[in-house]
Length: 241
View 1: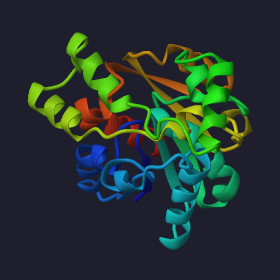
View 2: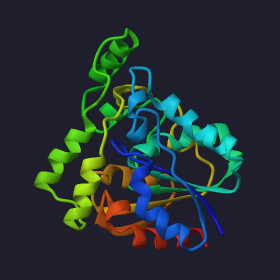
View 3: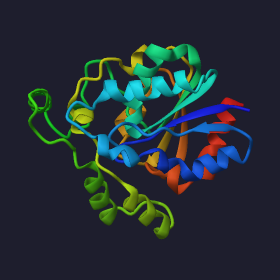
View 4: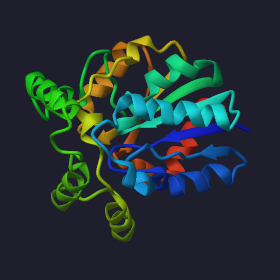
């Protein structure tokens, strides 16, 4: 049986894995679903100093204090920027990595400019403002996702989509504007990338392919961990078998 550590996407939290956790645990696997500082049930800890380094430490400490080894590290969406830093510090505890329609960062990039939310100059200026104790604490990603869902409903039951949208929380602005010091190009572990068909992550699929990662196609959308938890869990189990 495998040990999975599932890292959530932007605006989400450990709660987002509720259905996938059930699917994996029902087959005898062990699953950890930590929440990054400033998200979900830890939203009260959001602050201008909460960025990539803090979230890397969140996961490294789970690996350390839960005495985990031979772990399958799974990164959805935003968590793709956290995984390289975790592997750099605690890679000896990880067997392999699975990216779920996740961001594939290069060292020195910022999410804000990489994803086209702002220019590099604007993102750097915002980061400097946060350093000075000014500027927005949150990025408003939860409201952006809710607005997008009105025009492009998720590929899932409407009641489940409501559950997803109701649970969203803000994301620390620092996580969006800060430099990502460790890029995906540094990963030496085996990596599989599960690419959703309906997503804005097309550029990230191309990056994963250029890195030589094994690409798997899923017919769902970016929230497929909630929309198709059983199917996605089965794909992951085939990968690690």
